Length: 395
Image 1 (cartoon, rainbow, N blue to C red):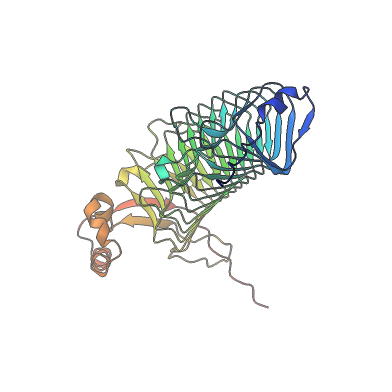
Image 2 (cartoon, rainbow, N blue to C red; image 1 turned 135 degrees about the horizontal axis):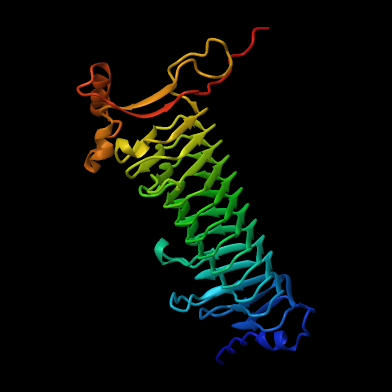
């Protein structure tokens, strides 16, 4: 006798349509079939035991009503189409709250489309197994403002992307195994604070997005050759403060300003154990770097050419390779800290020479040029007030 066919999942849509507006719809344990659309405001509560399974096609749940709340649900099994941007949740209304849900086996996680003031908090997001560039975004905001992305656990997806989306907040998320952890494109006035980012190709990328505030993030083990913990292009008025940048290929990468107002304020950050703490490229300088700590980096500063750092302001930074003294014990070096370009410029200007970076041969050549320069070296930076550790007081 042939086994009985599995019973189809009960559809969720009739339950949503039958619920009165502004009420709480509590689902019993088990799975319901998607896709489903929320057309009037309500709270959908799965109690951590209910799920919506879309069977590998389309978007699982679409929200078209403002003030809707989705919590305690599992949403799984979206389609794989980038054309239709198949997602776990599509938000098309204002003031939606997505809290405490598990979203997995989806192309895009949460897509906020022309919607404002959403709260996406405390969710667990995992994508479909796919090569990095064929994954969808964990969270995508397109033409939305006032949205908050907070305390989410994200891995195995592509980016948190904000496109043409000003004045949003990305806070306290744990992000692993992605492309860009956070990606801003033409999105000014965004706040990115207190996130823990690791094992991504690039940490936070800010492109043509002025007045960002990037503060208190911990970005570590971002090791892709072409990536950086922090990457900026044509961005002005940005505050980069109190971030920990550890064990990355490049700590901070930025083009030098094309215009006088395209300035980065880089203050109070720690750059430690990176291949290159800073990389600047372009025609002229102008960024402001104050009160940063540079510790045990393979290279403190790399450039496309010497002009890329002219005009930068360096003040009160701590340098572990400072060669001066602090005779009065006030924590400020008696002489400026300077960094010069010697033979180490070879691997910066000639890509094929990068293979020999830090090899004995190139190190010897660099040593000999410092001892007896073959040509006049160019100065990359001068910090007139380098900070150094205070000497312990005698008992």
